Image 1 (cartoon, helix red, strand yellow):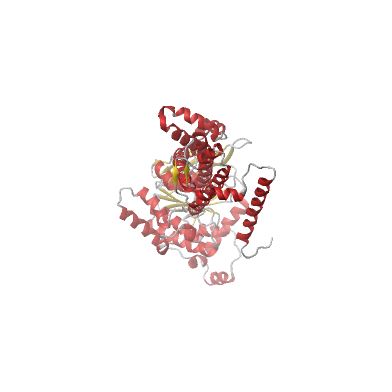
Image 2: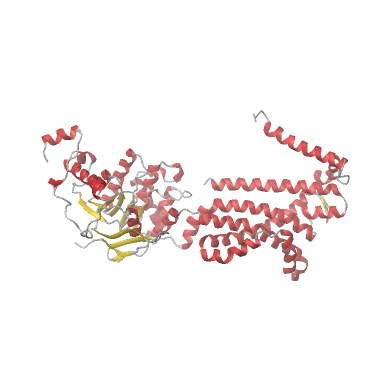
Length: 261
Length: 296
């Protein structure tokens, strides 16, 4: 298709327009419980226009909720990287390690956050009030870990033999081989893993908040469903989507910086 | 004279789906201290395999390698290796790449001293102005200069060069051969270089070791190259002996490298064949004119 001036702006706007029209028609015809776009905006305005307001535990501006979610994600995601990266290196470096742990990883990898969360709550039941937080962290970490683990392992296996030979000829210590050769050579793969992991961590947070009832973008969604304020479900979905998109963009920027080295 | 590097009965066998394949067998070679040896042969004949075994990057299947009285069991900074691809780490600057080795070889020296050593060798190879640049910003020739500096800066007992100039254009190649020769003379290093370039071998080496074709490749013959040092290309091109040796090497590679010698090659062979029996090659008219006035 021929490109024209402002096509980068106009074409996506057409996409949004189509969705809005379908949404409006649906709410007027077959899905009468679905709030119309106008009604959604009317009801959400307060949350969007004063995004950091705090009127009560479960009645706060949308960005304030998002902020809570982001903090929890950051913690769980950090945990996932801290645990996942070394596991990835071990998998990439040792065939025996791979033979021992690869099957269990392949089995645990497809398990959904919704399945992990109850187990997390059980694990940290003794923590009392904090059980929900720990359970959520556990869920985020264990779900978000796998892309980092697998990509790091692939990256380590893909380090060119030439670089390793340089290390052998210079008789670098294990530590120096790791820091001067293995980690820099694996970095681009690691970052791909990190980006995918962040996406999953953000997916998991919503599930975790819904089930634990914590304040946050996901918790707000579930609460408003129970309170029959369906407009806010849509507001939450849009927010979650936008934030996820922004996080992914941010990570690809970082990734590109590291790959350019 | 006691040899500095002693390769005896060296053999390498690779397992393949069709059973073991012996690439190199009964390879014997002794190198004196300070000698420059060129190892020449058809590609795939196993010359690089021999070199990586000396470097300690590949295991020996048979035989042994002794470097200045010590058996070679693994890789180490006492042998500086120049790879065909320079193998610089792309995330380090030129200086850092050289420093990586210097830090290993001179771990007792101070930081400043180590930096000075690295800078010194980089200056010698002509990279004084490019020390802080990354390999990606350099030409292929400059990268290989850095590779050479890295190998020399280790202050190794021996230099191993695996077709170091194979990927360069003819002019850059000549430049770098001179850089290498200068450094080699300056540091009095023992060097073993794999090449398939006859001219390069004759210009650089004291002895040219010709390998027979694989499998079961071995030393076919050893040619003494007795041009006075320091050498210059011009002086070589004016020497009829150069053309005789050249023709001899090419004849070997074209015709005789396919035959395995009946018995393992002698450890240090005399000048291969009497000069009279070496076939003449067509030379440039300038050369013919020259030898007419000055019969060698």
